[in-house]
Structures are given as structure tokens and as C-alpha cells.
Length: 270
Image (tube, rainbow, N blue to C red; front, side, top):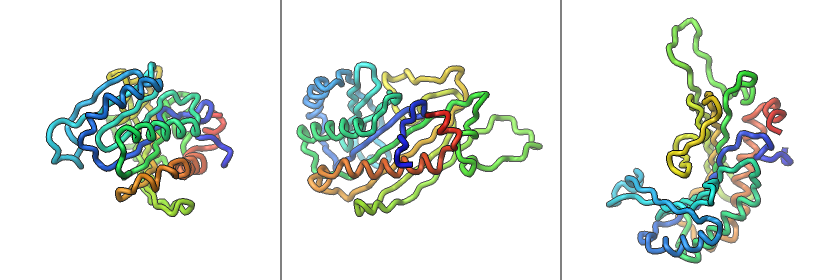
């Protein structure tokens, strides 16, 4: 089990996201030109701005909520920054390497901190999104553990729509090696139109969401594992970032391989 890799050679991984949230930097906009100049030199030359209403937890904020996006030339890697967090997302998952990914994010976070001087961290999180397109020769039900497939409704009822399955669970985790507690979310849901990414995962350039050939039913396995902090001093966490993310990753990997997928899935995706 421990030798298994989350990114199977032919696996369903379509997006990996990692995030650090910090105490609010009200004047974050003044740092963005310096951040942009730094990141364009580090293989993130493309620049976008996203505008929208403040999220619910910031409903008392005035004006528009702004996010600044820095992308690689092919948009396969994106850094999204707002006044409370930095998110790094990767879509070129065929050659995904966890260690390289973590090292890249920690380096980005340290360079960002050198510019803005983060006061404290409030959240560290890791998320893996997998997508299973339905195929005639292999259904999602062949690849996911039967205990996660829900209840079959009676066939004698004249249902007039195609069923979409959804499953969600949330658990607290005691990370004994860190002496910390974390939150683990597992969500399984479906898209009937063949989308490669689920709603809520922003794909760039905007409006160019990818689709599987033939636009089949797609089953998403979405694993999100994170730790919340009560404004922890960054100095107490920066030196431990790698082992913290390793712990988050280890739980996701264990759940994915030992509970979620079948032996047939492992054979197909190897």
C-alpha cells in the first residue's frame, strides 16, 4: 500500500490544488506588481484578474472581491492570490509528482512571504480531484467500492430523467505525528455533460473548460484534507510545511487506495 502512487500512470487524476490561507492583508493590491514581476521570472508569465462579489464570510466587505491569477504559458499551472490566501493548482497530471509539487508550492509561498510578510496562517489544505468518464466496457461502478455507490431506486417506477449519484462525508482526523487535528472531506458527484473539471475548480483561460470525447457521464472523486489554525504564527509553521502536507497527503492516499477504488481500477489505471 505505501508503495502505491496517488498518480497512477493511467489514473483519473485531473487536478491538484494546494492552499495556504493567512490573516487578511487589506492592502494586498499594492504588492501585486512586485508579485507579478517575481512570478513572471519563475515560469508564470500570464496574468489575469477575477472580479466578483465577496464570499459569504466577507459579506460586510465593500466593493468587489478581487483575485489575481498567474499562469504558466499553457495554463496548466495557476497561482491564485487574494487578500486572504494563495492557491496553487495543477492540471497537467499525467506526469504529476507529489514531491516536486510540494517543493514548488513551498518555494512559491516563501517568495510570496518575502514580498508581503504574512503575519499568521489560518489554513493549510490539499485537494485531489479525479474524474472517471463512463465507458461502455467499464462503468464507474466497476471502479468504485460498492459500499460507496448508494441505494438503487425501484425500477418499476417510471423515472423520466437519468440518475446522478452523489455521496459526501466529512471526518475529523487526529494527526498524531503532528499533534494536530485536521478535517477530511470526501465528495463523489457526477456531471452528465462530459466536463473534465467539476464546478468550482477554475480553469484558465476562462471559458475553455475541457470535455471528454463524446461528453459522457463523468464521476468525480474529490478529496479535500486541511488543517485550520487560530492565526498561528508563521514562524511556527513555515519550518514544518513539508511534514504537514505529507501528513495531509498520506491520509488522502490511504483513503483512495484502500477504501475508494477496486482492484479492477488499480489494474486498469496502472
